[in-house]
Image (cartoon, helix red, strand yellow):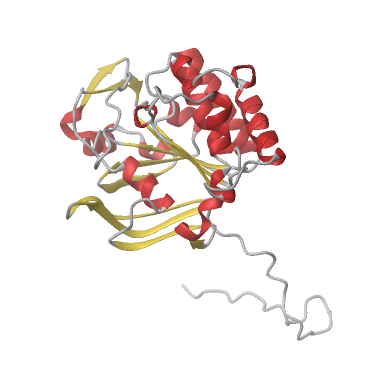
Length: 299
């Protein structure tokens, strides 16, 4: 079939005069996050194998996979905490490590020493160190931004409480406040809802969705398959390599989930639906142990 060549910008249209002026291409828009053939791991053992995908600005991407699949390592690689062996990571079109101040990060609660004697306000204020440095004293603006972040996540009234006194849901909120204090354009959340009850989980996800509506790009890892189709525009199934990437309706099916989770997954069929249960395991994704809880979810 012969292709029809479109009119060039300089061709006459409806008798218009030909002009040599080039068309305005408009502002360049880069993906919020782009991985290009990324390999990474620990002690010469690969954890990520040739992973490539793009996340558009303003999207929520849900990354799912079993323990030890590389979810935490992927986020640490974006932050520059783990150096890829091979490949490139771009944040808003620039090398990821150079754009660290534009990225907010919420680690798993298990990675935090909750017995450390600091207040909720202190933890939120720590997020400002990425811009000011550890040795510079916090100023009035830093305190105002920390207070605003705590207000945003609904725990401002707890700012003088010690972090060891917080409930599980409150601990996640203070970590989210710390991640938000610099108004990041890309937000990385590692298992943000693990172990939370349904009410607390939805409250946190409502905050995340509001951030997305304001233009923040969110990448979250999760064991809870049920939250991905409800809250995420895109889904990535990861088990060292990228098994599948696309919309939740394209990705969350029995074939892909079985390939992603393998023996970690039990699929129970009822009423024409497949319900996924992840088995309890103790696999490690590098030096930090991943959460090993996974509620039931519909696939």
